[in-house]
Amino acid sequence: MDTAIVSVPRRPELVSEPSPLKADGARTLTVEALYTLSENGRKASLLNGGNGRAVQQLTVDVPANRLHLVTVDAEGLARLNLRPRYDVKPDGHVVQIDAAPIYDQPPTIDELFMAAAKNHELERAYFAQRSTRARRRDAQHDVRAQVAQTFLTDRDQRALLHPPPSPRRCYMATAQGRLLFDADRDEGAARDVPAEAHRRFRADERARSERNTQERARRLALHEEKKRFIAEWIATKGTPEQQARQAGGMLPMAEAIEGIGDEAFAPFRDWPLYETAPPRCRHA
Image (cartoon, rainbow, N blue to C red):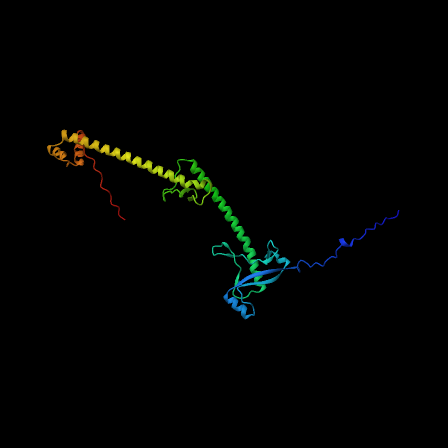
């Protein structure tokens, strides 16, 4: 049996000649590098034949294995990752600085690569730190929302009295310590806490004032009743001299009470009086 040979016509318009590709290690991308020179750096630039400008721009060929040091914007412009830059504070926090690095001498290409590599590492730490802060902030928000909801639901709860609650701010005691609620900054139920805390605070003040007024009236009535009883007792059982002083309002109540006590304890006159022991002196 003969083998059939199928002839496929060649279409030159669909065939392109293969272009030689560089190995990944040899491929490069031309990018912009922007940095800033200080006054000393601008002087050094002029001495070396540069333009002496504060903002310097140059093109750099970045190997393919270092493309993580490059950023490309929506317009396709590739830049070396030098701005924003990142720095570590003494407390260990990473901060973002929206400015290009500043040099006192025109940097070499290797120094620019090192700055971009530092930015790459610290950028990841910065966003990880922000993520941690966001989680902590969300946890605090949940705690605030729970404390606020419990406070608004339980009519017996009160805010801390020092400082006194105001319609805008108040402090609540929680398991984590004092918690500030601010109507201007809080959201949701937490925003309603200061106004409600202030309302309860004022209601408690009015109730306390009313109780104090009633207690004072009760004590005044009791005092008047004591004066009436003493006046009756002096009129019937006091000496003429005491009755005269009572009539002139000069008889001390303590003296009258002492006489009333002597009369009340007359049946026990023969019993020895109990005397309290003098306080002991503590010596070091």
